[in-house]
Length: 193
Image 1 (cartoon, rainbow, N blue to C red):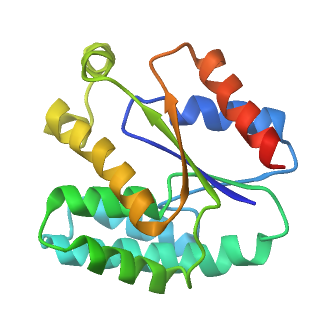
Image 2: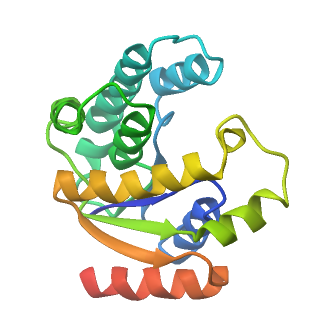
Image 3: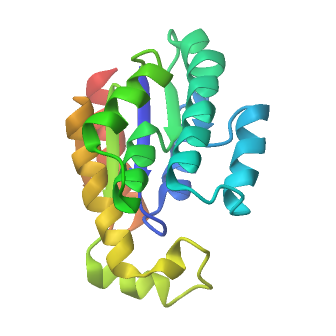
């Protein structure tokens, strides 16, 4: 079973991934982008702003996704795979940047992954108020500095992406304490195992 934990910055993905790692020690924990050597190099290129055209950045992420699907996901389909982000995020960020139609994003991502999609996507959702509170508590990175409206649009586009891909989407209220969020994820996951 292949699961993806999704959410905008500050939603608590890292905390939930750590809790899942502790509860399911035999699971393969992975991430997008950057889970392979090529993916790490691509991630660095993108973070440094080397790609100036949104299409260039999109194709770099597709290359990472193709490598991840063939080298990490496909060989481990018999295991529980838990991924910090997935193609759902990739499509959501590209949609938010604009310039590429949803149908095109979905088609290219399906091609890059050979149709290997998450069985379930857990989307950690924040309210605008909670996002504002969390952002005020930290130094902002490049994505967070784009503003709260930008991040909320990405969150909305994650729902759009998951639905367009036909993924099983579970919406999680990430404004709750981490233990309550984890209890909801774990209960749903246990019902699927």
